[in-house]
Image (tube, rainbow, N blue to C red; front, side, top):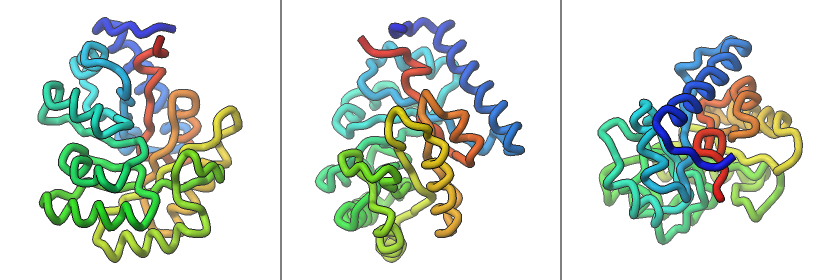
Amino acid sequence: MTTDSSSDSAAARLATIRDDIARAAAAARRDPAGIELVAVSKTHPAEAIEPLLGAGQASFGENRVQEAQAKWPALRRTDTRLHLVGQLQSNKADDAVELFNVIHSVDRPRLVDALARAMDKAGRRPDCFIQVDVGEEPQKGGVALADLPSLLATARDAKLPVVGLMCVPPADVEAAPYFALTAKLARDHGLAGLSMGMSSDYETAVMLGATVVRVGTALFGSRG
């Protein structure tokens, strides 16, 4: 499937995914209004994003601060919510706090400290998710399971607005056990937010409690 950015196609894809989320939520006896669909627009140009904006999509995800800085000032609307879903370098904390509404990849004490300083300086406090390395894949980022309590304590001491946990399960395996583990960890630590689920498994994530799903390919088509 190649990217088709026509308004009709964008609206149809968006409607299909919203319907899928609503069905999965109903099966889990959840209110679909409590699930935020984030359109992961990383690497996609403005002309691919505009039809989704026109179809009423408000939440978008980017992987890199620099790419978001280049593209979103001209696209952003008053209701737009920007999510940073990729790894964040500590030296980009100031820029991330200025630009994003939600940061999903808090995973180490140094980044907690940098974000806390940036938030104090900017006078704005984006919601934060702690990314957990549920698949023990350090290349993906995320705090080790054993270190989660300590990092959460550090983040809370720093007055970071931690709203939940985020995970990226290993590729090409059943995601459900990793989603269930993340949901249990969140419950154990008194966190309501769960950022989990992507194009191939967002319905499973909703069934297991996701409050945010991050969908790219199913909305934009594959690149190339």
